Image 1 (spheres, rainbow, N blue to C red):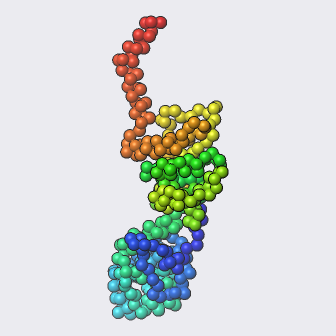
Image 2 (image 1 turned 90 degrees about the vertical axis):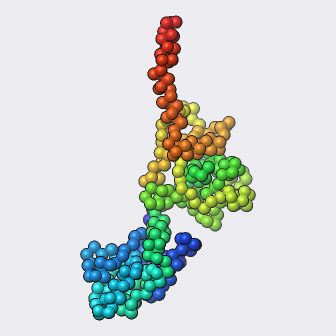
Length: 329
Protein backbone atom coordinates (compact mmCIF):
# COMPACT_ATOMS: atom_id res chain seq x y z
CA UNK A 1 0.00 0.00 0.00
CA UNK A 2 2.95 2.32 -0.59
CA UNK A 3 2.11 5.71 -2.06
CA UNK A 4 3.69 6.41 -5.40
CA UNK A 5 6.10 9.34 -5.74
CA UNK A 6 4.13 12.61 -5.90
CA UNK A 7 5.88 15.88 -6.73
CA UNK A 8 4.97 19.56 -6.80
CA UNK A 9 4.90 19.34 -10.61
CA UNK A 10 2.35 16.51 -10.35
CA UNK A 11 0.22 18.76 -8.16
CA UNK A 12 0.24 21.49 -10.81
CA UNK A 13 -0.48 19.04 -13.62
CA UNK A 14 -3.48 17.34 -11.99
CA UNK A 15 -6.33 17.56 -14.48
CA UNK A 16 -9.29 18.77 -12.45
CA UNK A 17 -12.45 20.46 -13.63
CA UNK A 18 -14.82 23.13 -12.34
CA UNK A 19 -15.36 22.95 -8.56
CA UNK A 20 -12.29 20.74 -8.08
CA UNK A 21 -9.80 22.84 -10.03
CA UNK A 22 -6.90 24.32 -8.07
CA UNK A 23 -5.95 26.95 -10.70
CA UNK A 24 -2.29 26.60 -9.79
CA UNK A 25 0.68 27.99 -11.70
CA UNK A 26 4.34 28.44 -10.82
CA UNK A 27 5.69 31.98 -10.35
CA UNK A 28 9.12 31.15 -8.91
CA UNK A 29 11.57 28.46 -7.83
CA UNK A 30 10.97 26.30 -10.91
CA UNK A 31 14.14 24.30 -10.28
CA UNK A 32 12.44 22.77 -7.25
CA UNK A 33 9.30 21.47 -8.99
CA UNK A 34 10.63 17.93 -8.61
CA UNK A 35 10.38 18.19 -4.81
CA UNK A 36 8.19 15.50 -3.31
CA UNK A 37 4.99 16.08 -1.36
CA UNK A 38 4.94 13.39 1.33
CA UNK A 39 2.27 14.56 3.77
CA UNK A 40 -1.40 15.18 2.86
CA UNK A 41 -1.72 18.23 5.08
CA UNK A 42 -1.23 22.01 5.01
CA UNK A 43 0.47 24.60 7.20
CA UNK A 44 -0.09 28.34 7.68
CA UNK A 45 3.43 29.63 8.58
CA UNK A 46 2.39 32.67 10.60
CA UNK A 47 4.25 31.60 13.75
CA UNK A 48 7.35 30.71 11.76
CA UNK A 49 7.44 34.14 10.11
CA UNK A 50 7.30 35.71 13.58
CA UNK A 51 10.41 33.75 14.52
CA UNK A 52 8.87 30.78 16.37
CA UNK A 53 10.24 27.68 14.65
CA UNK A 54 9.63 25.13 17.39
CA UNK A 55 7.49 22.34 15.93
CA UNK A 56 7.54 24.02 12.51
CA UNK A 57 5.63 21.71 10.13
CA UNK A 58 8.06 22.23 7.25
CA UNK A 59 7.16 18.86 5.66
CA UNK A 60 3.74 20.22 4.71
CA UNK A 61 2.70 22.51 1.87
CA UNK A 62 2.90 26.10 3.13
CA UNK A 63 -0.17 28.27 2.49
CA UNK A 64 0.11 32.06 2.40
CA UNK A 65 -3.12 34.05 2.63
CA UNK A 66 -3.77 37.74 3.06
CA UNK A 67 -2.62 37.73 6.68
CA UNK A 68 0.73 36.11 5.91
CA UNK A 69 1.36 38.35 2.90
CA UNK A 70 0.59 41.47 4.95
CA UNK A 71 3.09 40.31 7.54
CA UNK A 72 5.71 39.63 4.84
CA UNK A 73 5.22 43.18 3.61
CA UNK A 74 5.73 44.51 7.13
CA UNK A 75 8.93 42.47 7.56
CA UNK A 76 10.27 43.83 4.24
CA UNK A 77 9.50 47.42 5.24
CA UNK A 78 11.32 46.96 8.56
CA UNK A 79 14.20 45.07 6.95
CA UNK A 80 13.64 42.03 9.13
CA UNK A 81 14.12 39.15 6.72
CA UNK A 82 16.07 36.82 9.02
CA UNK A 83 12.97 34.75 9.74
CA UNK A 84 12.35 34.38 5.98
CA UNK A 85 15.92 33.22 5.43
CA UNK A 86 15.55 30.74 8.28
CA UNK A 87 12.32 29.37 6.78
CA UNK A 88 14.11 28.37 3.58
CA UNK A 89 16.75 26.45 5.47
CA UNK A 90 14.05 23.80 5.89
CA UNK A 91 13.19 21.45 2.97
CA UNK A 92 9.74 22.90 2.33
CA UNK A 93 7.83 21.15 -0.51
CA UNK A 94 6.41 24.44 -1.86
CA UNK A 95 4.76 27.73 -0.94
CA UNK A 96 1.31 28.55 -2.31
CA UNK A 97 -0.11 32.09 -2.40
CA UNK A 98 -3.89 32.42 -2.61
CA UNK A 99 -6.00 35.37 -3.89
CA UNK A 100 -3.39 35.86 -6.68
CA UNK A 101 -1.16 37.47 -4.04
CA UNK A 102 2.56 38.03 -4.68
CA UNK A 103 5.39 37.72 -2.15
CA UNK A 104 7.88 40.51 -1.90
CA UNK A 105 11.24 40.66 -3.67
CA UNK A 106 13.15 39.38 -0.62
CA UNK A 107 10.90 36.33 -0.38
CA UNK A 108 11.37 35.63 -4.10
CA UNK A 109 15.13 35.83 -3.82
CA UNK A 110 15.32 33.50 -0.83
CA UNK A 111 12.98 31.00 -2.50
CA UNK A 112 15.00 31.04 -5.71
CA UNK A 113 18.21 30.54 -3.78
CA UNK A 114 16.74 27.57 -1.94
CA UNK A 115 15.09 26.25 -5.13
CA UNK A 116 11.73 26.16 -3.38
CA UNK A 117 8.74 26.37 -5.74
CA UNK A 118 6.36 29.31 -5.34
CA UNK A 119 2.86 28.66 -6.65
CA UNK A 120 -0.09 31.00 -7.05
CA UNK A 121 -3.85 30.55 -7.27
CA UNK A 122 -6.74 32.96 -7.66
CA UNK A 123 -8.90 31.00 -5.20
CA UNK A 124 -9.65 32.28 -1.68
CA UNK A 125 -7.62 30.62 1.06
CA UNK A 126 -10.50 28.69 2.63
CA UNK A 127 -11.82 27.39 -0.69
CA UNK A 128 -8.37 26.42 -1.95
CA UNK A 129 -7.55 24.65 1.33
CA UNK A 130 -10.71 22.54 1.22
CA UNK A 131 -10.12 21.59 -2.42
CA UNK A 132 -6.47 20.62 -2.04
CA UNK A 133 -7.20 18.65 1.14
CA UNK A 134 -9.77 16.57 -0.74
CA UNK A 135 -7.25 15.93 -3.51
CA UNK A 136 -4.36 15.06 -1.19
CA UNK A 137 -6.59 12.83 0.91
CA UNK A 138 -7.47 10.85 -2.20
CA UNK A 139 -3.88 10.70 -3.50
CA UNK A 140 -2.40 9.52 -0.20
CA UNK A 141 -5.28 7.23 0.73
CA UNK A 142 -4.31 3.61 1.54
CA UNK A 143 -5.13 1.41 -1.44
CA UNK A 144 -5.16 -2.17 -2.66
CA UNK A 145 -6.40 -4.18 -5.63
CA UNK A 146 -8.92 -7.01 -5.27
CA UNK A 147 -10.02 -9.64 -7.78
CA UNK A 148 -13.76 -9.15 -8.10
CA UNK A 149 -16.57 -7.16 -9.70
CA UNK A 150 -17.96 -3.83 -8.48
CA UNK A 151 -21.50 -2.86 -9.46
CA UNK A 152 -24.02 -0.25 -8.40
CA UNK A 153 -27.41 -1.73 -7.53
CA UNK A 154 -30.21 0.63 -6.49
CA UNK A 155 -27.57 3.23 -5.59
CA UNK A 156 -25.60 0.81 -3.40
CA UNK A 157 -22.01 -0.10 -4.27
CA UNK A 158 -21.72 -3.91 -4.15
CA UNK A 159 -18.40 -5.73 -4.41
CA UNK A 160 -18.92 -9.27 -5.74
CA UNK A 161 -16.18 -11.70 -4.68
CA UNK A 162 -15.64 -15.40 -5.20
CA UNK A 163 -13.39 -18.04 -6.70
CA UNK A 164 -12.55 -17.89 -10.39
CA UNK A 165 -15.35 -19.36 -12.51
CA UNK A 166 -18.06 -19.08 -9.84
CA UNK A 167 -20.02 -16.62 -12.02
CA UNK A 168 -19.14 -13.13 -10.80
CA UNK A 169 -19.03 -11.52 -14.26
CA UNK A 170 -22.15 -13.37 -15.46
CA UNK A 171 -24.04 -12.17 -12.39
CA UNK A 172 -22.87 -8.59 -12.99
CA UNK A 173 -23.89 -8.84 -16.67
CA UNK A 174 -27.41 -9.87 -15.70
CA UNK A 175 -27.58 -6.97 -13.21
CA UNK A 176 -26.53 -4.56 -15.99
CA UNK A 177 -29.21 -6.06 -18.23
CA UNK A 178 -31.71 -5.32 -15.45
CA UNK A 179 -30.74 -1.62 -15.43
CA UNK A 180 -27.92 -1.43 -12.90
CA UNK A 181 -24.39 -0.11 -13.50
CA UNK A 182 -20.91 -1.56 -13.81
CA UNK A 183 -17.99 0.11 -12.07
CA UNK A 184 -15.19 -2.41 -12.54
CA UNK A 185 -14.74 -6.01 -13.63
CA UNK A 186 -11.97 -8.51 -12.81
CA UNK A 187 -9.67 -6.11 -10.86
CA UNK A 188 -11.03 -3.44 -8.51
CA UNK A 189 -8.76 -0.71 -7.13
CA UNK A 190 -9.90 0.29 -3.65
CA UNK A 191 -8.92 3.44 -1.74
CA UNK A 192 -9.71 4.18 1.88
CA UNK A 193 -10.72 7.84 1.92
CA UNK A 194 -11.09 9.84 5.17
CA UNK A 195 -10.25 6.74 7.16
CA UNK A 196 -13.64 5.01 6.82
CA UNK A 197 -14.90 5.29 3.22
CA UNK A 198 -13.92 2.67 0.64
CA UNK A 199 -13.99 3.95 -2.94
CA UNK A 200 -13.70 1.40 -5.73
CA UNK A 201 -12.76 1.97 -9.37
CA UNK A 202 -11.39 0.09 -12.34
CA UNK A 203 -7.68 -0.73 -12.29
CA UNK A 204 -7.15 0.51 -15.84
CA UNK A 205 -9.12 3.33 -17.51
CA UNK A 206 -8.18 2.12 -21.01
CA UNK A 207 -9.71 -1.34 -20.57
CA UNK A 208 -12.24 -0.23 -17.97
CA UNK A 209 -15.93 -1.13 -18.41
CA UNK A 210 -15.01 -4.21 -20.43
CA UNK A 211 -16.05 -7.65 -19.23
CA UNK A 212 -14.68 -11.13 -19.86
CA UNK A 213 -17.46 -13.68 -20.28
CA UNK A 214 -16.30 -17.28 -20.66
CA UNK A 215 -17.44 -18.66 -23.99
CA UNK A 216 -18.17 -15.18 -25.33
CA UNK A 217 -14.93 -13.28 -24.81
CA UNK A 218 -14.36 -9.58 -24.09
CA UNK A 219 -17.37 -7.30 -24.39
CA UNK A 220 -17.62 -3.51 -24.15
CA UNK A 221 -20.40 -2.62 -21.73
CA UNK A 222 -20.47 1.03 -22.83
CA UNK A 223 -21.06 0.14 -26.48
CA UNK A 224 -23.59 -2.59 -25.74
CA UNK A 225 -25.69 -0.93 -23.04
CA UNK A 226 -24.78 2.78 -23.28
CA UNK A 227 -23.08 5.22 -20.94
CA UNK A 228 -25.96 4.92 -18.48
CA UNK A 229 -24.80 1.39 -17.66
CA UNK A 230 -21.41 2.44 -16.27
CA UNK A 231 -19.80 4.74 -13.73
CA UNK A 232 -16.17 5.48 -12.95
CA UNK A 233 -16.12 4.95 -9.21
CA UNK A 234 -18.42 4.06 -6.34
CA UNK A 235 -18.31 3.68 -2.58
CA UNK A 236 -18.26 0.03 -1.49
CA UNK A 237 -21.17 -0.47 0.92
CA UNK A 238 -21.82 -4.20 0.71
CA UNK A 239 -19.70 -7.28 -0.06
CA UNK A 240 -21.33 -10.33 -1.65
CA UNK A 241 -19.20 -13.47 -1.69
CA UNK A 242 -20.38 -16.15 -4.12
CA UNK A 243 -19.42 -19.74 -3.38
CA UNK A 244 -20.28 -23.17 -4.71
CA UNK A 245 -23.14 -24.81 -2.82
CA UNK A 246 -21.86 -27.04 -0.02
CA UNK A 247 -24.53 -29.48 1.16
CA UNK A 248 -22.67 -30.02 4.44
CA UNK A 249 -22.41 -26.32 5.29
CA UNK A 250 -25.09 -24.65 7.37
CA UNK A 251 -26.14 -21.37 5.74
CA UNK A 252 -27.85 -18.49 7.52
CA UNK A 253 -31.59 -18.77 6.84
CA UNK A 254 -32.89 -16.00 9.10
CA UNK A 255 -30.39 -13.20 8.45
CA UNK A 256 -29.90 -12.39 12.13
CA UNK A 257 -26.20 -13.22 11.98
CA UNK A 258 -24.34 -10.18 10.68
CA UNK A 259 -21.01 -10.77 8.94
CA UNK A 260 -18.38 -8.27 7.87
CA UNK A 261 -15.47 -8.15 5.43
CA UNK A 262 -12.49 -6.07 6.54
CA UNK A 263 -10.84 -4.11 3.72
CA UNK A 264 -8.05 -1.64 4.49
CA UNK A 265 -9.15 -1.58 8.12
CA UNK A 266 -12.80 -0.79 7.30
CA UNK A 267 -15.53 -3.33 8.10
CA UNK A 268 -18.13 -3.71 5.35
CA UNK A 269 -21.35 -5.76 5.69
CA UNK A 270 -20.94 -9.12 3.95
CA UNK A 271 -23.29 -11.76 2.58
CA UNK A 272 -22.27 -15.30 1.63
CA UNK A 273 -24.49 -16.57 -1.16
CA UNK A 274 -24.26 -20.21 -2.26
CA UNK A 275 -24.51 -20.80 -6.00
CA UNK A 276 -26.23 -23.79 -7.59
CA UNK A 277 -28.50 -24.40 -10.60
CA UNK A 278 -31.93 -22.87 -10.18
CA UNK A 279 -30.88 -19.99 -7.92
CA UNK A 280 -31.40 -16.55 -9.44
CA UNK A 281 -28.33 -14.81 -8.02
CA UNK A 282 -28.94 -11.36 -9.64
CA UNK A 283 -32.43 -11.18 -8.09
CA UNK A 284 -31.00 -12.24 -4.72
CA UNK A 285 -28.39 -9.46 -4.96
CA UNK A 286 -31.07 -6.92 -5.89
CA UNK A 287 -33.07 -7.98 -2.84
CA UNK A 288 -29.94 -7.82 -0.68
CA UNK A 289 -29.31 -4.26 -1.89
CA UNK A 290 -32.83 -3.15 -1.01
CA UNK A 291 -32.64 -4.92 2.36
CA UNK A 292 -29.31 -3.20 3.12
CA UNK A 293 -30.84 0.18 2.30
CA UNK A 294 -33.67 -0.58 4.73
CA UNK A 295 -31.10 -1.43 7.41
CA UNK A 296 -29.40 1.93 6.87
CA UNK A 297 -32.80 3.55 7.37
CA UNK A 298 -33.16 1.75 10.71
CA UNK A 299 -35.36 -1.18 9.69
CA UNK A 300 -34.06 -4.75 10.05
CA UNK A 301 -36.44 -7.40 8.71
CA UNK A 302 -34.69 -10.34 10.36
CA UNK A 303 -34.56 -8.71 13.80
CA UNK A 304 -38.21 -7.64 13.55
CA UNK A 305 -39.21 -11.18 12.60
CA UNK A 306 -37.27 -12.55 15.56
CA UNK A 307 -38.90 -10.07 17.95
CA UNK A 308 -42.37 -10.94 16.62
CA UNK A 309 -41.69 -14.65 17.24
CA UNK A 310 -40.60 -13.90 20.81
CA UNK A 311 -43.72 -11.79 21.41
CA UNK A 312 -45.89 -14.58 20.02
CA UNK A 313 -44.24 -17.14 22.29
CA UNK A 314 -44.88 -14.90 25.30
CA UNK A 315 -48.48 -14.23 24.29
CA UNK A 316 -51.57 -15.91 25.72
CA UNK A 317 -52.32 -17.51 22.36
CA UNK A 318 -49.01 -19.36 22.30
CA UNK A 319 -49.45 -20.54 25.88
CA UNK A 320 -52.96 -21.80 25.20
CA UNK A 321 -51.75 -23.70 22.16
CA UNK A 322 -48.94 -25.23 24.19
CA UNK A 323 -51.11 -26.23 27.13
CA UNK A 324 -53.79 -27.48 24.77
CA UNK A 325 -51.28 -29.83 23.19
CA UNK A 326 -50.21 -31.03 26.66
CA UNK A 327 -53.83 -31.81 27.52
CA UNK A 328 -54.24 -33.82 24.33
CA UNK A 329 -51.12 -35.83 25.12
